[in-house]
Length: 416
Image (tube, rainbow, N blue to C red; front, side, top):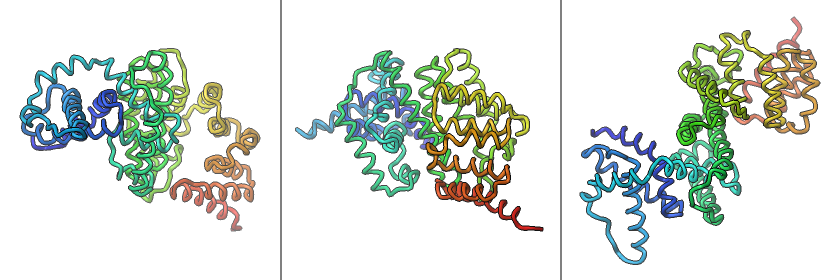
């Protein structure tokens, strides 16, 4: 067992539970993180020869707690940890720890850890960065590359987030059932924000694109904590369906391929099947929520063998429901797109007009408006809309895609 890959997988899987327990014990993010890192180092030194313990999480908590306590004591007196042989032979202590850390403890610890990262005083970028560092254990360098900032700037961002959390004086007691219900929405929102950071980056930045996988992993973890919560099932299904198209979303040159033009044979059927099963299970609870509705829309695209078979009528109805559950101009914009497939560009443009003020700074609004204007033959207005979209593009791929649409308009304007 000299290959360290299995150790890395075990440490990654155990991290949220172990970090949550250590945070509850030490009530300080930095101390908990340092204690966990020390436990990981000891695991790397001892597990290759001795093999993994019966409960890796309990082992890491036990060793991390001893390490953290030792560091605290060293500020007053020099007290060494027990000998390495003693720490490496934790069969009795590990079993005792595993018995006391039941599933309820794990659930509360992980939820508390995620909720701390979603503190309302933190900007969204700090929430994501803190969650990736504390919950997922992604390095500061990787997070910095994902957000396209320097490593020192990201280190400062995470440090400021930790300071805000410490200043807020959050309670570390196990949350009640009512508190858990209140905490789930911001936790799910944080996970979806992580996913969208990766999804919007596409192929341009592998460090960001990998965030999609991490968000899906966190959603699965949340599922295990709350196996009967349909909105978590909906969130996981939504991300799986969106991520299943990753190989078809860009061509060999990194250009965006619209959904209707994608090679559907490249879609990941395994992820689609898992998502559809999750969605069916969620729907049986008869408690519709925004994530379930969005997943249902994505599922209709996934079930269509060709773009021409897409059930746009049902999609438009689902967007109407989503407008009631989670009203926003962006939801209304998506409904306009579905509506245009049913009633044409003229009526869709009329439906789009009331959204202009709210979405003037939104890339997709001007892209949709330009496309609809082009369909009606309003070439000059379409060019202006596409130009505005290019100025608001968040990535080179987005800008390049709109430039292609502009080029098409220019070609059509040249007399034959």
